[in-house]
Length: 277
Image 1 (cartoon, rainbow, N blue to C red):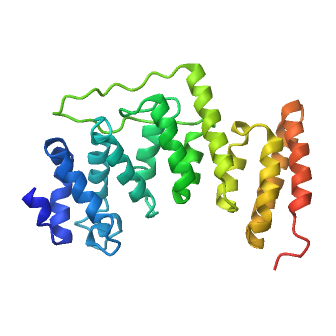
Image 2 (cartoon, rainbow, N blue to C red):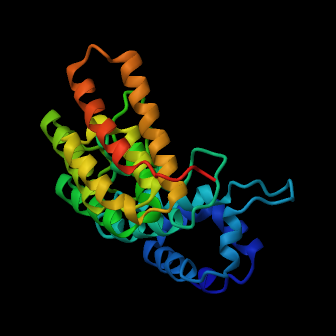
Image 3 (cartoon, rainbow, N blue to C red):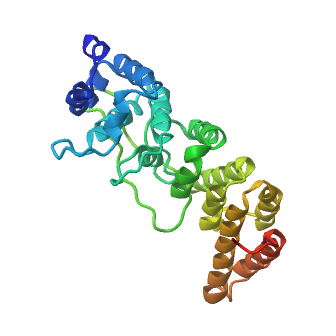
């Protein structure tokens, strides 16, 4: 406890980080409290652990120890919610990561719709995902883009405690549960979507998961007037590209062609009248 109370410098954090997972197992309350306090300080030196450095002796990997420590806590009912909140807080900082190991990736592997991990139950995951989608828009689009099925998804294990005795078996997902949570996530996302090109690009990239298409088009048309014109042009470009791809590769699919018809109507209804400057 005294160690964490007396951290005053970036180098002290760098010294502690490689051992953070072990500290999390030994004194989870102390570690979580320390991280909860420090991450509320926007000007703290702590955030430099996530930034690139010019010093080759300090590669930008210290933050991975923080992620591993938080992942450890996700297996323990007593600490999982606090750990999850910290991962969300770290993800919302939106640092640019060159490694796949990042806060959003930890969230993806925790909530992976076909291979979830951690101690949360099926219903608890739905509640937590709903909260992230509705109240944390800065990360919702990226997380949902990772979660919704695209036929190319991969995942790997989150970090697990080495010394604490807690259940660390992955949840078993029934096909019916998987289909239910995919529908739940897509419906929740559309219900809370904002007039942002980034949000709508996620929808277009995963359009197979959003049904019916008429509901998507209606919501889009309703929100477009609140979007900046340059974002509307970008959205129209994405819609046009989607339509073009469907006509080229799925022209014999009735479902795809119905979707194309609805999107074409949407496209011409939202396309700005003025030429792009």
